[in-house]
Length: 97
Image 1 (cartoon, rainbow, N blue to C red):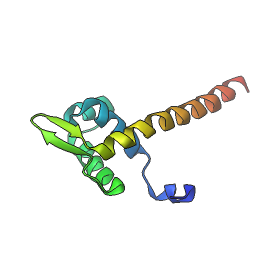
Image 2 (cartoon, rainbow, N blue to C red):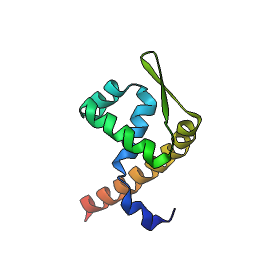
Image 3 (tube, rainbow, N blue to C red):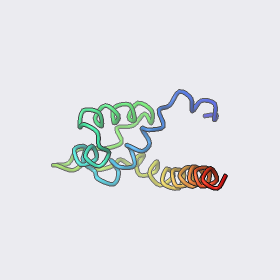
Image 4 (cartoon, rainbow, N blue to C red):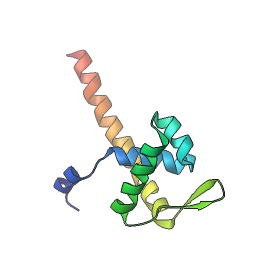
């Protein structure tokens, strides 16, 4: 994928994915994100399409991540940290200007 192709992806889905990995429960993820459960379920559906993988398998009341989901999570955490750092630098430079 080229960077220009990112225009076709809702990057907010990646934040939803990260919370789903942490919570392993759609309802709790929705609460943390201040979203409704249907919105998080819809985001999970779009994530499954994006990554061409089920990402989670329901086992009892928990959602266990697939191997692909764990791979994505491992790479995604540092990427989101980098984005936050860049935005923080931009925000702090505006305060000093």
